[in-house]
Each structure stands twice: as C-alpha cells, then as structure tokens.
Image (cartoon, rainbow, N blue to C red; front, top):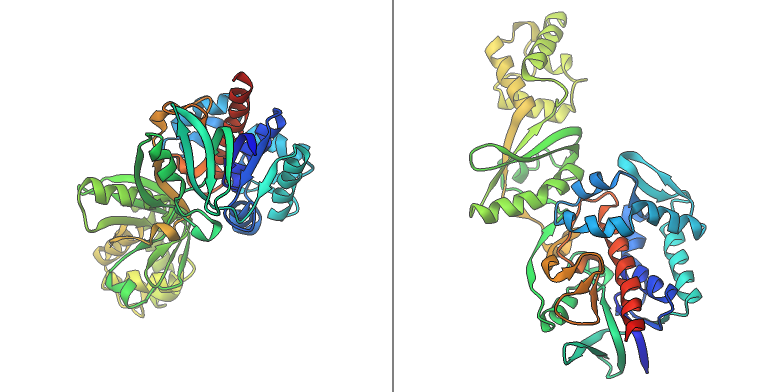
Amino acid sequence: MKFDVVVIGGGPSGLMAAIAAGEKGAKVLLLEKGDKLGRKLAISGGGRCNVTNNLPVDEIIKHIPGNGRFLFSAFSIYNNKDIIAFFEKLGVALKEEDHGRMFPVSNKSSDVVDAMLRQLERYRVKVMKNAPVKDIQYIDGHVSSVLLKDGQSFECDAVILAAGGKSVPQTGSTGDGYAWAKKAGHTITELYPTEVPLTSGEPFIRNKSLQGLSLRDVELSVLNPKGKALITHKMDMIFTHFGISGPAVLRCSQFVVKAMKKWNLTEVTMKLDHFPDYNQEELFQHFNKLLKDGNKKAIKNILKGEMPERYLQFLLHKAEIDENEPGNIIAHDKLRTFVQLCKGFTFTVNGTLSLEKAFVTGGGISVKEVHPKEMSSKLMNGLYFCGEILDIHGYTGGYNITSALVTGRLAGVNAAAYCRSL
C-alpha cells in the first residue's frame, strides 16, 4: 500500500506531525513500535502533561540551551501561543502555573493525548501500533519506502522521523532513528544525558548524612577548573543516596557533562548558596544579631528557623562550631566561616546517572543539515525530522514538548506540501 507520508514514532512530535500532514490533505500512516501512542505526553509534568510554556519566545529559546536558536525560524511560523490555541480549540482548557508552565485545567494528561488521537481519526490517519520499523529505503536521493520488522513494506513519498532520543526508554525512545538518518548521510552528534541527576563520591553522600534532605530556592552553580561559575540556577534540590537531584540539579547537569568533556575532568565542583538573597556581609550581620539576641541559647536552637535542621548541623560541624555552644559566645571568625559555607558550600560530583535515566537526550541529528523552516533534510528529498531525535534539548518545564510540537507541526505541514508538489 502506498502513502504520501509515513510518520515513525507516536510521541508528541509524531502525533503533531501526523495531524498536521493529515490536515493538509496528505494520506498519512503513523507507525508506533509500542502498544500505546503519546506515552511521553502522558508522563510529562508528573502525569499532568506540561504541554508548553507561556513565556515570550526569546525566553523560551533561552530555556533551550541545546541549539535553541535553531528554532527562531520555526517559532516565527508556529510557536507556543499557537500550541495553546491548538489545544483550546480541541476543547482542552489550559491553565498557567509557576514559571509559565501550561497544564490542562483537568490536570489529566489523558485529556491532551485523547484530543490528539481524535484529530488523527478526523484526518483519517492510519495508525499501526506494535509496528517496529526495520529500515527506510532511499532511491536516487529520495525516500522510497518503509520496511517493518514483520516484513510489511509501505511505499511513500515522505518520511517524518519522530522516533525520539535514548532517554526514558520505557516510552519507546531507544535511539532506533539515528541509524536511518545516518543511512541518509546525516551526522549524529554525540549523545549524552541532560536533565539528569548527578552522582558524587563525597563522604557526606557515601555516609548518607544528608540523604533525602530537600533545600528550597537555593542557588546551585557549576564551576570551571578556575572556580568561575559556568551556570547558576536558583531552584529546589535534594540530596540522594547516590548524589544530588531536583530541578536545580537537572538544569545544571548538562553543564557538568560538558565540563567533564571539555577539560577532561573526573570530577566537577559545584557551589551551593543557601541564602542567595543575602550577600555575605548582610548574612553575617543578620546571624550576628540573632546570636546576640539569643542570649545563652544554643546556636542550633537560635538558627533552627533559618534553614533545615540537618543542613544547619552539617554546616556548623564543617565550620567547627559546637551546635550546643551558646550563640552569644561564638567567635566572629568562626561565624564568618559558617556564613561562607552558607553562601558557598562547595563539593564535587563525578558524573550523572545513565542516558536511559535522563529526562532528555543531548545530541542527535545535526541541525546544520536540516532546513530550519521546514524540518526537511538538506541531504535526502522527502525526509523530515522532529522532536528529540534532533540535536535540540531544553530544560524541563514545557520547553522540550514545545520544541517537539513546533518541529512536528512544521515537519507535517511541509511533508504534505512536498508530496503535493510531486
């Protein structure tokens, strides 16, 4: 059987690509190797589906540190506001939460997935699940057909590769698509984990003294070998049995990976500022006043409302201050040491959890070989890319799904236009 467009992958970008191509009148086949469509959509935003982000386009690009600038052209055609309008038109009312994150009012990711599935039906997209692809055939510089592992073959004029990266493999993203892009002559940049927890061999991690401790609105920095901050994020974090995790850590993780590679490091230094809204002198004066006013109370009791108790005790110990010592007799030099630790506790990390444990894949099909307004291959006629298979990655918070839906829309629209032009 012949189709105009075959979409490989039923994640966010593949669904959007199939809908867009169908909307433009193309005869579309959507192939999904698993038994469910939209699995990554279903688990995003903690199962509530963070469909996009409502920040201005410039801000969204800043939150996509992995080749986000490549998307400027795409966003000029279809952007986050269009995504919001798309879902609301389908009857999925959205609400804005912190940092511009957009969720369905119902808090159900199933509402988002179901709305997209109804669109597939509306545009008569043929969907095949449990249909793993074996190969894409190319003839004389253009797409020819798609071959399934069960031996079925489908002729087509265009293929949209939406097979995902290698992160969260339980959703079907196992990196299958890279080989088919490579076969067409495309460069696959080195794959690495991003938005991933970090590992550490520090004694306080090994002895689990801070395990399970959450810190809110702290500033976490990745330092270069000269001690200068490469990146700083002010968000929450948590200490784990293997290292550190939480939003601030996930955002810093790709910079740790890149630093290790760039300077050939086995460890990277992180700096933790628990009081980012104070400078060092302000914090010293603040604590000094509390200690004076506390009379003979133990320092741990005077300062216990200032920070989590376990972290307070940990830093007092590092500053060589007895936590039971009366606050009013603490020497100024010891208090200054303690303040320095509050403002800049440094420790090392030695890597990340595996790519399979990451939320997002760094690396992928080189964007230099893709037309930015079409998502079409510069090397093979009829071949299009969208979503995480591209070397584009952002922070968590709706940025990766925004990229997936925008690139999916462009791939679908332009693949359909290409088929009409033949």
